Amino acid sequence: MMRGAVVVLLIAASTANAGHEFDGRDLAAGAVLYSEHCADCHGANLEGQPNWRVADENGVLPAPPHDETGHTWHHSNTQLFDYTKLGGQEALGRSGVTGFTSGMPGFSGALSDGEIWQVLAFIASTWPARQAKVQAGRNPPH
Image: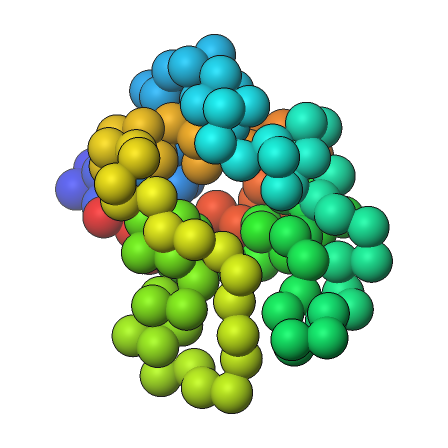
């Protein structure tokens, strides 16, 4: 009986830690990196650009908000990381998405992998509990 309880606890712990890529990150450093590399497009307060759901004349959508009003929290940690590191167009292409033009540049030359995770952890730290729970559920347990 005790062994079954241990298995249940391990499963619960694994599921609860599905967002582990964000765990233990330096949120203050993430905030500074966000301010330096992301805020110009996504807003100082994560509010995104005006009319972010309406494409411009070239078919490119403005930068979306990263707060709870946007869709960042709809994506897994890996998707967010790839989109940030590779840029939207390459990340979408690798996922088989065609017919969509992304204006998101890749930051692999500007930020290390660890710095990208710090930025993403900072963004995630601002989400209300409901959005954080939904987003955590999009990540497989490790």
